[in-house]
Amino acid sequence: MSTLLPESVQEAGTLTIATDAQLPPNNFVGPDGKTIIGVSVDMGNAVAKALGVKAKFVNTKFASLITGLQAGRYDIAISGVTDTAERQKQVDFVDFIESGQVFIVPKGNPGKVDSQDAMCGKTLSLVTGTISVDLAEAQSAKCVQAGQGQVTILKFPTVADALLQLTNGRADANIANLGKAAYQSKESGGKLEVAGKPFATSYDAVAVKKGDKEMIAALQYGFEQIIKDGTYQKILEKWDVQDSAVDKVVVNGGDSLEGSTS
Image 1 (cartoon, rainbow, N blue to C red):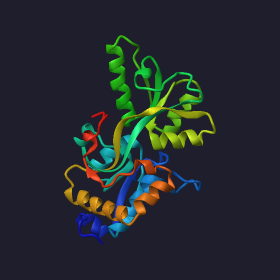
Image 2 (tube, one colour):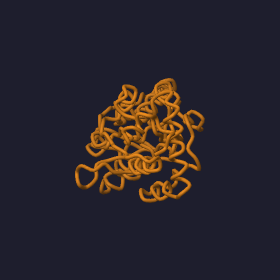
Image 3 (cartoon, rainbow, N blue to C red):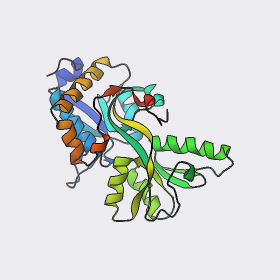
Image 4 (cartoon, one colour):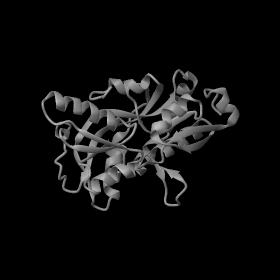
């Protein structure tokens, strides 16, 4: 067992990880209806193994990840969480995947939403607490300033609820990182598709309680080991998101990326 881990985790022998299991391909409930699977889950298990402890995943809503972490209910959170400067005020991040945002739209893209400017006057259905809401709100302000229609933002607790608005004609688009968007469009049976080029480059990260230097050091070491032995790349390839690979993990690097929303 790694002595880099906080003493409480060493004593428990378990790394308790919060995740929102409705964000495929990052984290979602598998075919058996109970097992949580996905990119983030595989990464969490691999890093825990490299550190000599077991991983225990706790399913919770995305909007509760950071507050639960701050309250000490979990050791870390892995759930496709985007590292932003605003969130860095609340927690620290260990960044392990780089990605960009795209639009998920109904087949044929009837609302013609394929860029940030094209959002003006349109309706977007998004998941509460995600970076997509921040992006849409920022763009809406720009639209109004330019004398165009504001972006109407519908917020929902789950991805399924948000995407349903696209297929029933109540919304024009959803925003998701490229990996999630590609997965959702593939799973929609032809009802949805990906639109636009990636924008707002960002990091998906492990969220850690603010100032927890021991945990940060342990996670950096764990990721270094799985990158070195090839496990990291195999996980990305398994979920067809290998284009999001990083050479090494960084801490709180989200606000340094070009196109960051922070």
